[in-house]
Length: 188
Image 1 (cartoon, rainbow, N blue to C red):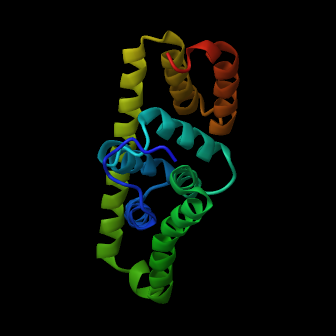
Image 2 (cartoon, rainbow, N blue to C red):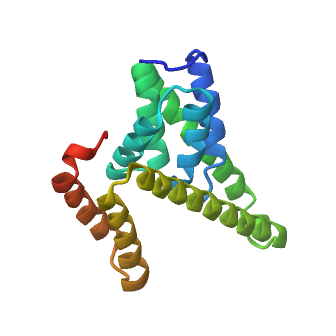
């Protein structure tokens, strides 16, 4: 439970922050990355960039929802089992509330032009967040001056976009390449 900041860890702060991050994780699990980074790395300094990337990598490799998996790992790192439960509950609660409301008023939401426009705007925002994360990660790889990660990023992008190679196959190939060719360069 190492804490790198002046902002003292508390279960309430973990719950509140994770709840808010979860409320704005619209567009899929990857949208959580910039929100987690802004809150827990940049603002609280509870974890660093490398720990965040490690958590994201593990979260996307394990079964379940990436945002929930990440919150569980963050909570466990900061507060043990109770922290993991707090992170999980805070991440699951906002979508549960929203889905319950939408289900109760489905007919009104399904045909409402304004709701459709709001959802389109949220999709655009989520796309911008994902693009920002991708550019930030690419920039960090260029700063490290490691050629292989840059080649992996570009090749994976091209294989998926232009040749329609299944993303799961690409992730497995990238994992094998990383395992065999980047062992010594992970923390350089």
